[in-house]
Image (cartoon, rainbow, N blue to C red; front, side):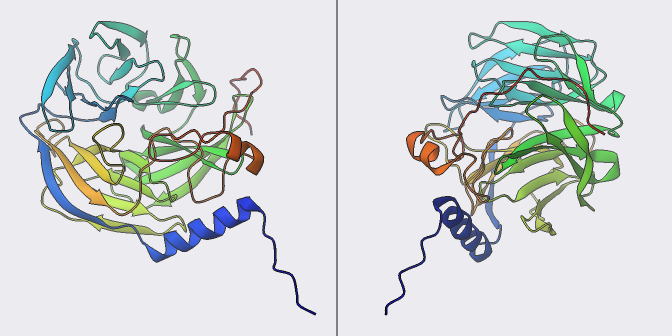
Length: 336
């Protein structure tokens, strides 16, 4: 009697295939080149959905680049710019560490203060489910929610919190935080009611960990201390490149939008003297990228049931799949 073939659940097939791909293709960075130069201390960069690369600078200028490297000035604010993020509504948020505020820049370039009274706002992410806006407040060692425009501390005691990333594995979400002075990345479980779990160490030995970005296979790219490292999906920390074009990059972003490749990564070279860098560098990478605030990355199964997955094939930046779910009213307590 012939044994019938084993029928595996669709979600398990996705997990097995992604694991095979990840094992067969360890992270690799090649072909480093200067994409844009003549900048003034670029510290962060982010892509708009319509295919523009936004780069901030220590002189308070935000430039917008097309895929060919042509630049226009989007806006000039009166503060040095650290973290840059593009919101779902198309506005650009720009954090100023010394200004203790976050600016909002409309698509037409009009700038206004979005939130202020934050202790050294450094990096910004927005969740895709609820649209929450989270900022690392480096000078007060905290993560702050500024969704309403009024800062509210949601996580405390995170020594010099810096780069942020969000990743979902199945139905579980975590907020990843670079603790620069500790050369470590930690993470916090994110609950649908808006609360967070306790701090968990994710990776150590990452020299002055600064900018974070996940690829679509679950590997975490980390820049800091003039290095480009990767934390593989199995938790190993590896140096990815010592290319001479690495001039103390502070942050990085995968290409997205028309004219950009999701297998290219862009680095903002801040410079070893905290603002003396002048260029944006790009390199080829052998995995697709996921957005800095990504949810539903490939590599750990789809973030929804197979039937929903087949109904909602909504591509995200980097090729991930988003299956939004309704959530309860958020509560700003940190779980013990």
